[in-house]
Amino acid sequence: MLIPFSRAAIAALLMWAGLSMLVYGQPAPPEHGQLPKNELVPPGAAIGETPGGMMPGADPFMLLENSRQVQADLDLSEDQIRRLGHSGQLFRNQLQELAHATDAAAKSEMQRQIWTSRGAIAKILDRQQLQRLQQIMLQIEGPCLAVNDPRFSQELDLSETQVTSMATTCRQVAMEMRAAFRPPTVGEEPCTALYANRDRLEGLRAQGRSRVVALLSTSQQRRLQDMQGRELTLEPLVPPQCTGRKMAPHDN
Image 1 (cartoon, rainbow, N blue to C red):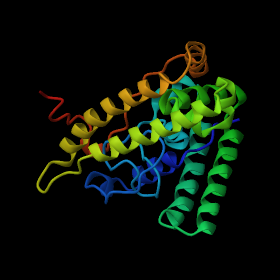
Image 2 (cartoon, helix red, strand yellow):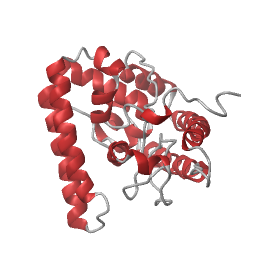
Image 3 (cartoon, rainbow, N blue to C red):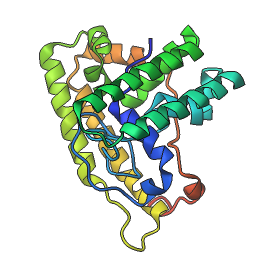
Image 4 (cartoon, rainbow, N blue to C red):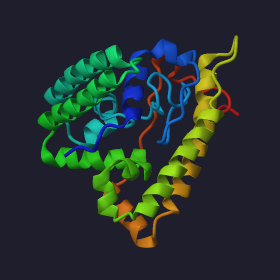
């Protein structure tokens, strides 16, 4: 089975769909409880309590549709990629309609759409591909994913105290990253802001992951490593207009 789609995943997918809005920033969103991975928009933008993310893998559909590295790693066929693209577009359209809803019914419908999308992916990928996708998602989401998914918590044999401590740390780091985000200033090249935010947020994300992992025992840390499988290093997705334009601080 697939790991649950996080609300971060929804934000990532919607952010990619609304690229021009991403590059020029969004109003500060509410806090959230998972590590964000986005350098284009404030962690949490677009949907309440979502960290957002532009790493290929922050959302399974975006990962499978846009990362050639993952497509090759999973040995996806052209037909699978085509079908994933179709299902992903339907998913985006459905979530766009619910993105700004705040009532309980709309949130419930959003959650239903997320679970429906999991089934769509499961119908397209075979069992081995699904297992590998789960490993890659855990690599990217990190230990905070274990807090949000009971199956991972059980596999790591987390105590209630550990789950509480890890959840608290994940929220703290998410707030720090949200505060560290800097939208483009008036007249600033958006791509410059993108790379500056990437450097700043990636550093905080790595530090935060270390803080959460430190709450695990040595044996649990080894188990987490095993659950992640063979490492796959992914490059962040970059908006087309910023491709090949690595500006400050990367050029310094």
